[in-house]
Length: 237
Image (tube, rainbow, N blue to C red; front, side, top):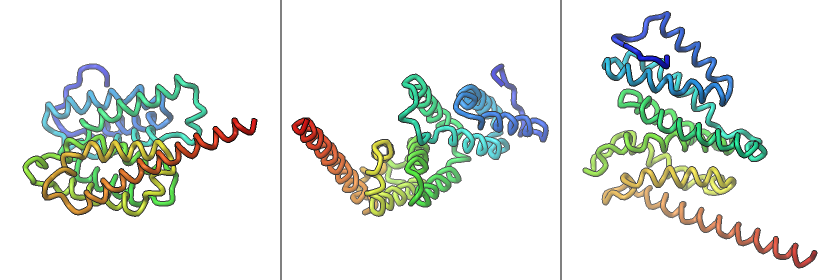
């Protein structure tokens, strides 16, 4: 898959089976996901040249699901060696770039609908589930925001605004439960500024901005409390 690819038609049964086998190998862990991700980017480039993205849509959809799983923060991530933490973050950056290619105009509606559904359904789940979904959603901001500068919001942009608004209104406490989750939420909101800043923006945009401000204030208060507790401990000692 790393050499030149010449795609002229949708995948045959044997070729599709080979690609799905590659996906199963990719699910073995971060190392295999990192090693095989470039192959899918190369494959998409060839499929795009042949103008047969629609035929490969089911295969690319499975690829996106598999590689997203590898980008979920492990529960013990803070105990990983520094070099392994850096490798994990680098993979997530590479995945963002890959999602911008693999989630094209054909795949965008289904992708946005699926990810927004995951964000809403993650209430009560581990913070890592919602964080990964927000991370994936932020990767397609450019495609989802197409037309926003002219005031023509796509159905995907409207759904994203509705989801962020719901998250900001119903789950502020959950967002501030973990720093990484809060940071990813703020990044996701920031990349959708072209939509949020529209003069005719939905009322929910104001709620999102208010939630961001409240989250930032809450984080500052928590930091101040930690500093005060540390100072008190030092005095006791």
